Image (cartoon, rainbow, N blue to C red; front, side):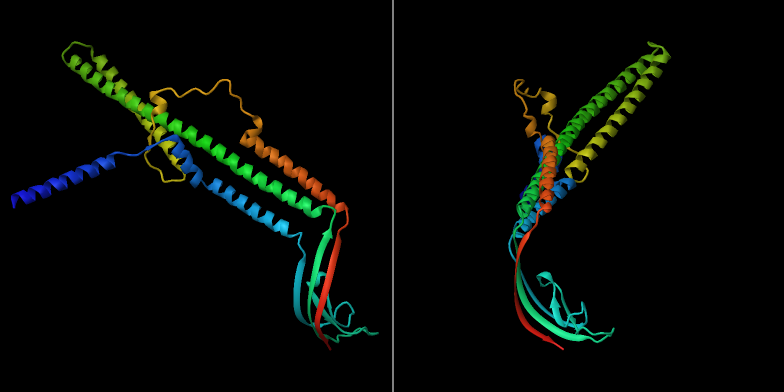
Length: 309
């Protein structure tokens, strides 16, 4: 009986120990993971991604505008309009009206009619209007793509800067804590020597002032650390929390980039974004120039039953 209880107690103790140890070990967040979380959660990046999807959908719709329009109409009307007798329909069959005969005097006689028809309309030649409109929308898609890329690029820069600022703030807080511990130990020594008459009384006042200054400096360092931690959580789109950061940047110098390497300005995300803004303006100018030419349309109507009174 005693051995069974002992095994149970040992099992409970080991379980509690490992749970406590697991809670105490916080996962280290490196800078790449922070950037990936931020890109997945940040609101403006999600908005620009949705805007890109909308522009791609509108591009598909723009391409279908080159296809013929097929319209089916079935309407019944009561009234007079345009001095026409019986039902009438407008261009592309979008409107139907009923009217009575033309009379010599003003009257309110109404005609009742119904019209069932189907028609097909197609702008088969428009001097490049449809093609240029598709090109404009393709430029809009390219603009939104580069807009998303440059927003991601700028946000990665913000996250990386905040990450390094928080890492520096954590190291500064640790240094200020060590400085406070040193000042407290020195205060104890000075106070003891003053009490024994080995130092003047003013030395204890100076030691107390050093401790107070160290406490103030530690408080300011903690405040800075808290600000940077909250800012990093905001950029990552998560709740504020304490971060265990990768101290590789502190323990060793990062690998130097190739000094001979050059960056192509055309590949810079922000420059590409502004270049695409110029491109879409040029395409819109070409598209607007096509409105100075006429459009040739084909219209075919298959009337159905027509009844009027």
